[in-house]
Image 1 (cartoon, chains in turn green, cyan):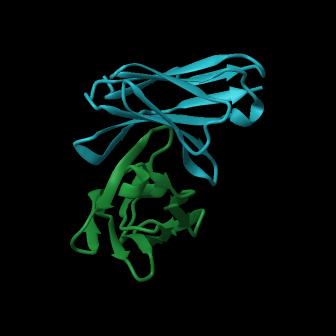
Image 2 (cartoon, chains in turn green, red):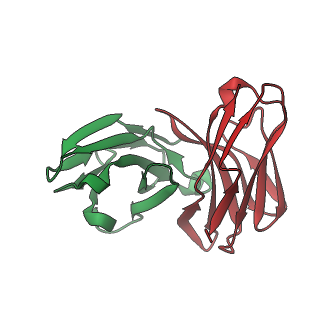
Image 3 (cartoon, helix red, strand yellow):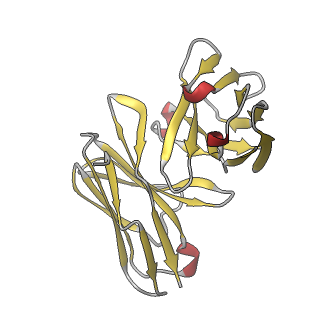
Length: 114
Length: 113
């Protein structure tokens, strides 16, 4: 069975500072990995996804993530955050054995301070 | 109009009452899902449907039932609501031809008192 662990439940960060959100997964087969963002009182939006190919994936709003198979990680980074990046971020995994259904981590709440 | 619409947006109900949450979509997607979100637990899958005649239990289906009335409509019912079903509920859709393009609704905040 697949599972996802987000190691930080909350990450406070100052505006224009870098941020890294950590995600580790477990799965018995090849996986597909995702990061979603949830702004206050909204649904989830896809930030980026890794399906195959280059291990460095670039997404919207300046975010990027790196797939590391040996460490079973998919950490999300942004070099300089804005106030508008304040949101909750979810890492998710999917694999063919699970019928391509998404399994989510517990979420990381990012609070950007001025 | 939103691609995935959930109604109601907010609901307070009493323990023991039956309640239905509704989801409709204009994406033309064949697959639909119901998730619940709890603080620190992320989103957990309740039920999913790969087409109108296909209904499957997710990891936390106890206490819930669903109905896929049409390709565009997927409703979630709580037959007898209990306080630990207080949560934020999300409907999502995807297309079997594009398995990783999930679209989420804006959520229904349910409080059971």
